[in-house]
Picture 1 (cartoon, rainbow, N blue to C red):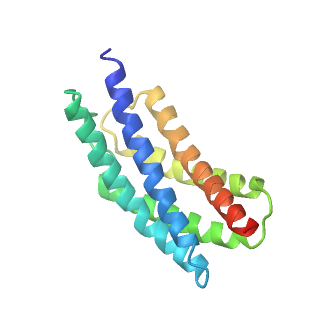
Picture 2 (cartoon, rainbow, N blue to C red):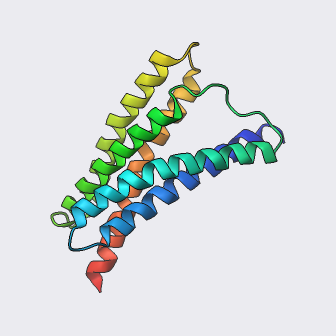
Length: 168
């Protein structure tokens, strides 16, 4: 099924990206003495690392499936990696702050949602202003949904980890 090949490659990219970032934030949040700083630092390191790793895995999957990947790098991978570093540094610090104040998952989800919406707007804005041709609406919607859902999911994973640690 040739139509499934790009979907498989995108799935490899998205899953690897979210896994690496969330693991980085969980590791940072486990450093109790300097939790806020360490979680933010972990986000700053994990986001660009995850971005580049996911990109390599995506391209490798595309080659393995013998299809061409999406054309152009708008915006540039370095700009996207920098934006992701800022986004997940912020999310890490904010989640560390939240672990001392919130007992339910709702504030975590709301923090992830707010973070996702703000940074999705930045990234979609860059795509719209830097693209030589108008991107397909479906591609923009897909990208926006991914940009919003990953911070929400990551926030909820950290909530679950925090609650499990509190139960011990």
